[in-house]
Image 1 (cartoon, rainbow, N blue to C red):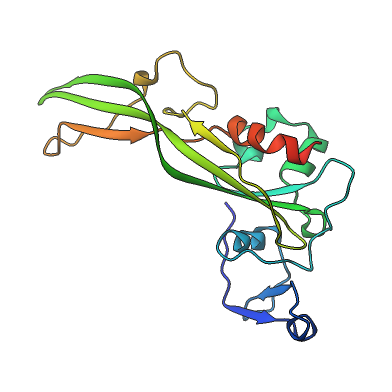
Image 2 (cartoon, rainbow, N blue to C red; image 1 turned 45 degrees about the horizontal axis):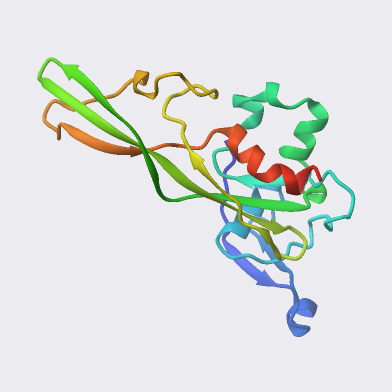
Length: 199
């Protein structure tokens, strides 16, 4: 699990005087810049001097901030060369930064009915409305904002035939129904980004 803390934001003097594009991020311990520092792009887009320029030739290595633990959850989705593109570990190789956000509720999927010792319970499932905002890491320029409908309702990385088969924790003294939006599959995020990363 990557952890991130920015304790101070320092404008590089020369870049600031020139209306520059770069913001240097460092903490009080002067730790070296790491890949996870690119998370800052998702709260305040700006250029990183540590990043590689986006070249004209694919692939374009991307740092993804969101539900994206591909090395742990879905290593079989990429070979080692693919992981270097989709989950780079060297900050200087990153060309793109992708910020994954659930921005709303999508279409209704299904009502799931359950029976517990204390009575009946149901969950209304909806697709999650996701947006992926993609930036050039070197300049902070926005490249694209593709959207997709998240339909992950269980723990598996592949869709199940029946989304109601998920395990539901039901408090005995709580409400007898709830709404739930689907999460994003790693494969869905990859598909949204692929035209910009591998082409």
